Image (cartoon, rainbow, N blue to C red; front, side, top):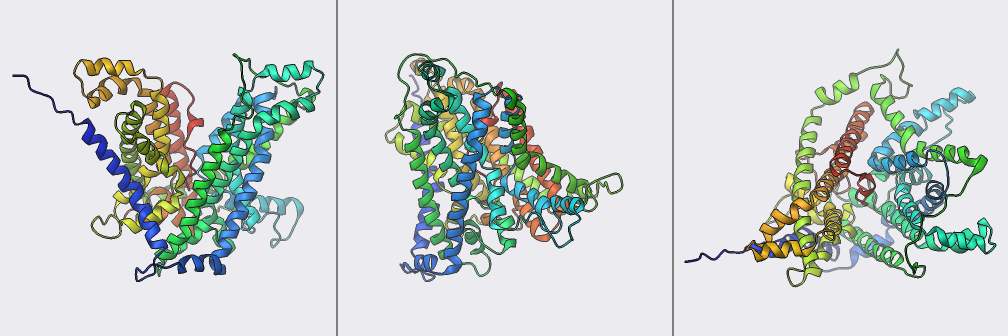
Length: 566
């Protein structure tokens, strides 16, 4: 008698749908409930009245919009000429400039804010001290003050413009050179060709990049928390965080988080519409690459401009972190007379929070990368092969967290899991849920793209030989997706290490992670330990990305998740 095999594929796939609903829909549902409730649980709109009428809430909202608009315009103004120089001209060292710009994405924005605090604090900033030394200015005079709205906008722009640059440089490189050649042959000059051909083709991508910059600045928590709070003002994300300080006001926090969520969804939809435009679609056969424009005597001036821009997110911040890490006095330039290893010894051997934070961080990073990668792999497989009804809903749920700012997700998870039947607050599990949810869209998109390279006929052959869906996925599809799986695992790992905005809402003293420890040390003023831990975080992420590049066999840094962590 032939024993019939039980195919558990469908129940497992249905279980994944339930998991997605629990980790995404449940927190967002509780967010909506609390936003429209008072402390007694009664329905009310009073939270939104307070939000838009009380200056202590309205001012952060206005400030956030000012920052987002300013950052997006600055990023477009900086990224556009830089992308053109790298992609369309014979500028020397163009490939190195492009690599360094993408490498700046390794730096978490809150680490960049800490570094610029060391550089441009009014009294102790290294650049201000150097200016006083050169000009003979008094000790109470400062050239730069990072604790201002302008200083915060500058720092956020430093770590946001690379996203716009990558989008625009890729678009410029894909432009067909024949169109510009035809324009030149018809008598148009360089500026006329740029105005009529190059700019119209690149404009949709530039607009989409500007929206990305706006979105990143809108949702950022770490940099405003480090620079805005000492300066005496709040952004919307830092105000939401402050509402969890004693006495907590979860209803107001939920009400403040909801407009941020809705605005993020609207911006992502607008970005999709802009990128989906076909007004300048190229019709025809295969086109050649664009012709490089010769800069002549301006070649090295262009390189100097690019290096000047790179000094802002890379060279100056890392020099300041290294100086602080190895100097007895952080406000002094390190030399033979004040070089020390005490900060390293204190951080790893005397600071009791360091080793637990590192253990928690590695546990969560490995767990989230493994579980999130597996979840994304199965979801992408179900959607790509249309295995169950409602697979489009599954795809929507997998990408939905992209529209949820980290601080908003943290609020939702806090509200959902601080009550029975599933009380997870105060454990590492609630952080794991947050990290998996945050990184799921990027992981799903990686696998979704990879499945296009795997022909369904291979799976059909396995099915005809009696293999179940899961067996086919493990034996046939999995090995073919090895590169995508390795890259996705590494990217989730890196994303978890960098994440601050959700962790700052969900951590307790027993579940502190590396990013939160750096933030806490900022409040206590241990700048040496901050520098050491910041460099440690960057070193870990760099090693993982380099390993991913080697294992995958091609450069992968440009495909880092687009969500800014921190």
